[in-house]
Amino acid sequence: MEHVPADDIALLMILAGPAGSGKTTLCERIVADNDRIERLVTCTTRQPRENEIDGMDYHFLSNEAFDENIEAGAFLEWAKVHTNRYGTLKSVIEDKLTEQIDLVMNIDVQGVATVRETAASHPAIEQRLVTVFIMPSDFDELRRRLHGRGQDDEQEIARRIQSAEAEVKQWSSFDYVIRSKSKEEDYAAIRSIWQAEKRKASRLG
Image 1 (cartoon, rainbow, N blue to C red):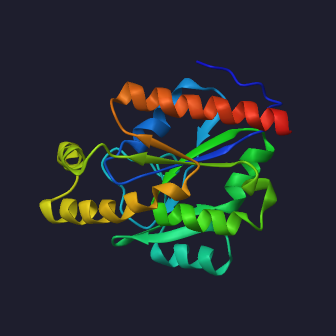
Image 2 (image 1 turned 90 degrees about the horizontal axis):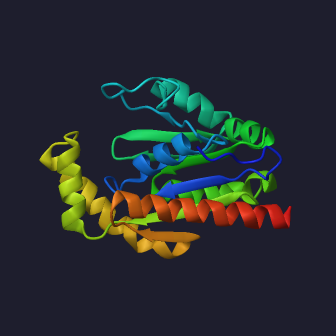
Image 3 (image 1 turned 90 degrees about the vertical axis):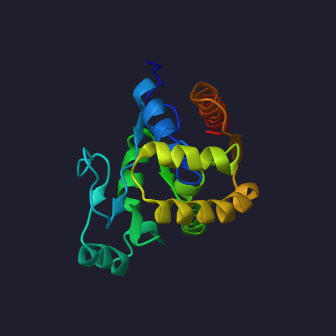
């Protein structure tokens, strides 16, 4: 496990990409391999999947509770994805960055755009924001991965592929783009980005 000095400037690294691109696996691995990085737990109105734990995988909220957070201005971003809503609490990010803990999260492409817009009025977040897009090698491979997960029916997979076709057109708005290859190559790429940004942040700080 790699150790990052506690006095380093903390980062908020966001991974985005189509469903099945591997962004969740990358988040989990970089957190497991580094003792100063935590996965940012976001909120959702969808039902938990098998083996998902409230507060660890997501904060599972009712639609009413989600609405209350919107009205209170508590979210850095929130979006409706397919039939469910997802949101990121500003207070959680600010607390972790103040504790000098790096954060990594995976959200959808439209959520990243909202994060940038909202972070513009929160300098402590904006200055530490790093965005990475995971580009699928091709849509046939993406379809194979979605089938392999065994979570969605054919109709849902078709909807996710359609969404992916729109999402990949947004790649140029990200700080970094990783063209997905093997799991090891993708992880090496994301780790290199994180290390480079840590060095940059330390110099600027």
